[in-house]
Image 1 (cartoon, one colour):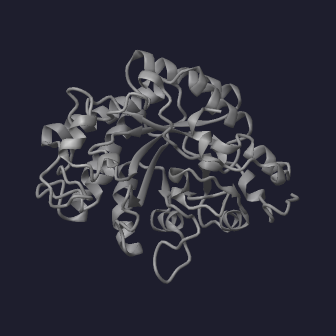
Image 2 (cartoon, one colour):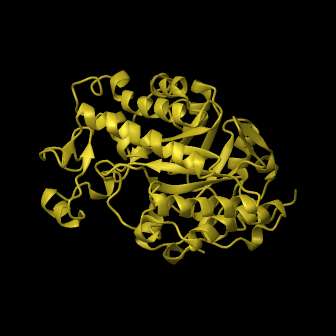
Length: 385
């Protein structure tokens, strides 16, 4: 395949098929989950269906939706973030799935519970109280705000009954996602959201069976996976998205060595995870000292399961946070990521802002038309083009 001066090197590895459980993908290109907050009342409308279908039409192998709130009262405070429960929202998602399938695409629903919403960290109880909807109560493992570590607990510290109810809500939502026609689910266990709050000792200060040791901190997430597996059956793919970094805490770590990563991830495999989505800010950064392998690569090594890499793929001169300060990003070189994919370090490559900027990214890459790719600009986030 020919390439150009913007993106030199072969992209052939991106266009190999892959099968995981009941899911067969035409290629290794993944649309990363990106919260858009453009679903009025939590219901994805026709513009959401068109947004995802446009990427399927242009050859994205697997689309992962933005985080959709599970059917739990404390899962999400923002009205414009889509829900994955209730008649209207489920009908909206069924229309999204139908639109994607009509274009030959495959789509996974990302199931999310915000817990002590990381977007509220550091604000303090008084200010948070002015932001929350009337009657809404935050729930989390310990009420711990990592940006205000000495502050009293914020919101409700989850009881055992709360935990059991939340696990059940995940399972119900997983079953609803399968009935809506999704091809897989992804559990959001990254960036400081609820499952990750249990994993991270900074936000999990519990002294019961769900806190303290690494084995205890992983218990909640494992129970969620196990319940979802039972709800969707043995062959329906379950992806787990995890990260070291958290919102506003970019040096945070769950594992300092491959052995610690193995101890963290293997219980999820045993519970039923089929694939790991290792979220990093920059895919090229090594996960651990002494090796050039990234986090997705190490998750594949220690679990034997397929892995998705992500982190500024297809962007040039851009950091993860540039979209927050209004900056754009040029079209970047994919030679390194495709070479590492071809070598088997990881199995799929997820793009975020590059696919917001240009829905035709896969088809242009396949045709050797990288010079025609549209660069990302922050104002693109205001619409669902």
